[in-house]
Image (cartoon, rainbow, N blue to C red; front, side):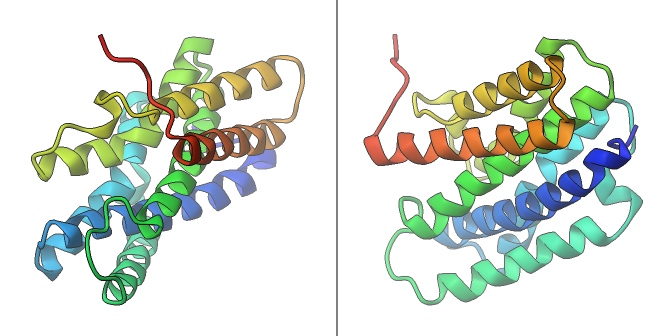
Length: 208
C-alpha cells in the first residue's frame, strides 16, 4: 500500500521534510520545558514519527519507522538541528519563529503524505481528508500530551483547519484528473500558505 511510483518521489520528499521539521518542533518544545537531552530526543522523535505511525496503522500497514531505520535517522537529524539552534536562542521558544516556521512546514508536508496514503488506500473523500489531518497533527498532539498541555489542535488556534483544507484540495484536484504528485504539492502549498497567513494575522477559530 505504498504510494504509486509516480507519486513516490513526492511522498519521499514530503516525508523527509515533515520528519525533520516536526523533530525540530518536538525538540524545541522539550527544550522550552527544560527537559534533559534524552527527553529532548524522545519528544523530538515522537513528534516526528507519531503522525505517520497513526496514518499507517489506520490503513493497515506496518509503520515506516518500524520497517527501516531511515525515518528514525532523519528524525534524529532534526533533533540535532534543534539542539544546535536552541543554544543560540534566549527566552521562551514556544512563540519564536524558530519553532513556528518548522511547525508550519511539517504540518504542510505531513498533510500531503497523509492525503497520498489515503488516496492510494482507496479511502473515501472523508477518509482522505481525515488521514491528511491526523498525519499532520498527530505527532504534535502526542508531544503536547506528554508535556501536560492541551493539544494545540483542541484549542481555538487556527491549526488543524489548514490541514483539513489541504486534504480537501488534494481530493478535489485528484478527482478531476490532476496527477497525485501535483495534487500533493498543491495540498502542501495551501496548508503552508494558510497556516503562515493565520500566524501573521492572528486568526483564531471562535470558541463557544
